[in-house]
Image 1 (cartoon, rainbow, N blue to C red):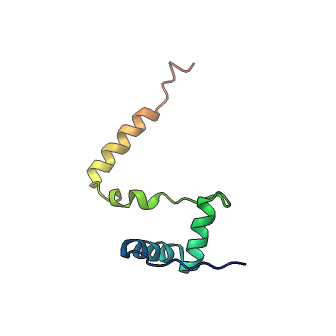
Image 2 (image 1 turned 30 degrees about the horizontal axis):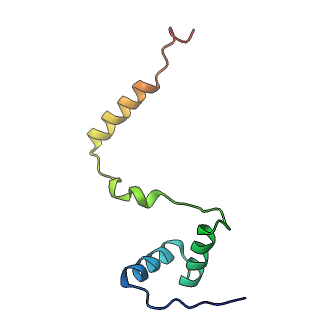
Length: 84
């Protein structure tokens, strides 16, 4: 089995790889092999999109959340007269 060395990683890349490794509970070596396999189509990616939306979580007040829930409920209601 071959080994490779990657020279001169810039600070941003090194930091991001460290963050991803910590989030996934992997070593840097395991993370990089996983990323390579995903990108090359050798493994199906297990994409977690939650981090894309973290900045929006917990932003609504209770009143705003209730208004949203009521509005969504109105769209989900079935009009019995129409569906007879």
